[in-house]
Length: 288
Length: 245
Image 1: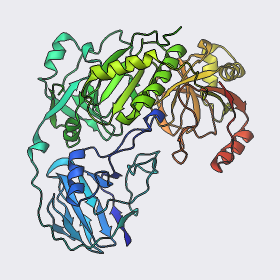
Image 2: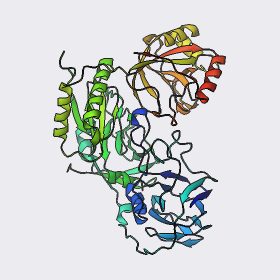
Image 3: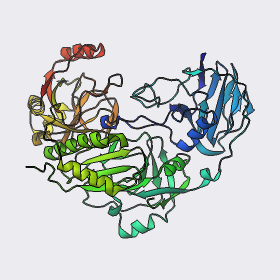
Image 4: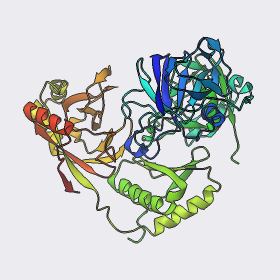
């Protein structure tokens, strides 16, 4: 049996994402995919979904979603006060959903992005081997009011009442694990030491493409003329303004600014849960 | 020459599971050929370890499925591949003929560009469409081609205030580069025309008909032809002409 999740209202920035679109960077196509892989995989794992099952990534303000069919869901990541038919429901737990149930969200308590998994994953269109939204690869970058997202129906009698305890410090920790980037050496000798002791704050420009990190003006190397080269999600670039930009999942495939640091997967996951004015710092991990 | 890669390559890791290989910092067809040859050897020999590879003017980045346990071992393997480079010229490289309507309805900066160079708009069009351009790589936007070969005579500085919306298909000059906007986007280049072709089509496999190492040549069309080709492209009945490179 197939049904739909109907978008009654879209929330601030909600999209369908899986682990990303691979093999197309040579055509300039960003990887996309869930920003916080740890939280998204938790939601999928609870439902015994495949790791690559498509989830909904919800940012800061949640959507209102109407289910046309019985299923099970799980929500992980940021706490945006999820409610089913107006009743608060817990995170990180399998939730029984019945036909005509309405899922909504309230106040953001911690984190920034939460992940809604449905049993079997969202069955939205696969474009270039991925269901991740990214225009112009997919028609839209976000879900829109009235969109009907196909899902498979499931027996909604939930026998597994366990719920997973997550480590709440994941959302409060400001250290972003990273390694040195290819152009780390372009920082001044003093900056090469101090960069790991600095607290930076998240600028207003933060989205799925990248996060601007403010609070210290690094010296942009003069006379440095770097040719455009590959960048990856997690690449931290030094821009001519002296600010750093940490690239995220929808980043371009190539860039022309020095690549000072490279966030680890954990670093990207953590940063994805930060919002404007939150503080972060870099912690250098040694290669294993 | 036996050793087809005369360049000293440098290897740097980017995080735990990507490796950056760099050539000297130059924009040069010979370097690009080198990169593309090594790329195809690496994809053939190490393909099962790789998610994908990305080339630019002077670099090749290898993205692995899992963390690289020994950079030294990978580097050694790649150095060996450099020694046994196949001498086959990439026979797949093509020169694509790209129709461009330089009518002022599309070429909104054409007058301005002509004035800056003290040339007529016809001269700008002739210079732009006579040159042959090399595709170094695709980046910035899905299907955006980094082209080399814009004649010096028509190098034109970027506009001081970028436009918020540039039409899909816009053909433009930015500094020493020329390019085609594959989708609507903001941009600061001088717009001199519009191509009705789809440079990026997610419904096609591969989504771009052009690839790194190919060449492009523009040919002028009028507004009627632009409209006609646009329709044919929509109906997927337009055949893009290409010569072997």
